Image 1 (tube, rainbow, N blue to C red):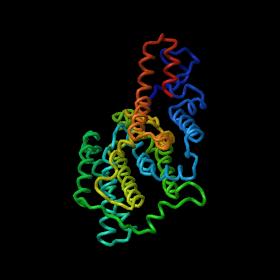
Image 2 (cartoon, rainbow, N blue to C red):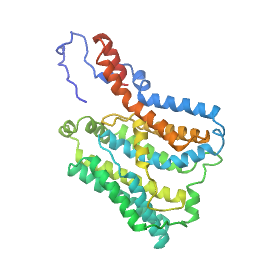
Image 3 (cartoon, rainbow, N blue to C red):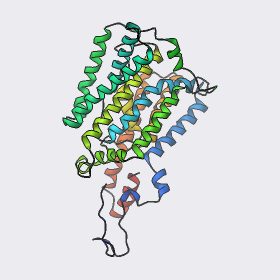
Image 4 (cartoon, rainbow, N blue to C red):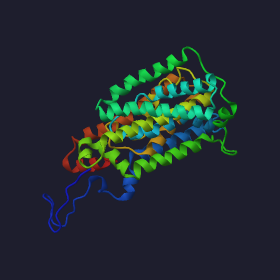
Length: 360
């Protein structure tokens, strides 16, 4: 993030007079910086797959496809928003699915057993999710433990508490006015109303990550947390807040999950955390931190959803779909390293052009 600043009237070492030193990422025209990116590649791939599915896959262009596609993807879309920020800092949260299950269990117990109003139970569940994130964030940000180890532990802890609360029972019979509300459409369209909630949250996270000092601190932590600390970023507090956001949004996803299926049980949402992380990485976020953008992540989630829906309509099994998405994810992660390896073996003149291409 840093670069030396030449003294006015003198040329920096290694540069002739009149030759300006620039940030490498800004050495190209603006339109290239916006269009020649991994996020744009994911969006174009999504458009290609969507057009192919609409024209070639039977019933994909039917009125119910997009409706159920968004309903099914909604937990991933929601949790991918804070997970993007967490991964950009170089951390990870594997406990989000267990937080979904725990908050769903709390919603079920308060609504069905204790007789609370669903709105009150939902607020308590979201608060429980935020507390789960607070616990993760404290251990990672202030104690300094690795997030991978912490969230593997809390993955088991939160799901274990949920199973302990519910046992082998499943809570059902939630108020119809609430279960019907998440399935209602926007007017006569094929889009569910819950997309409005996601849209509001997406705008908030876009402003937070891309248009605020807090967001710039998130990127700086991912690039070098020591340098970020010396530049004035409160690294521990930033990580704490990000994990709290991840927990609170996972709590919201747990409430949605309960209403979507009219069910709260301890073995729900298995593997959801891996789907979220896969979508975030597919959307162009670096697993090493310091890089990524939310529009690419949303495109990554939709790409996985469109591929899954199209292959399901074609009669492919869940295992085949998982293999295809896994290969796509591996390709998206390996490609930058492969380009770096190839660039290291190119002659110097060609290497510069390759490096500029890789930074996209």
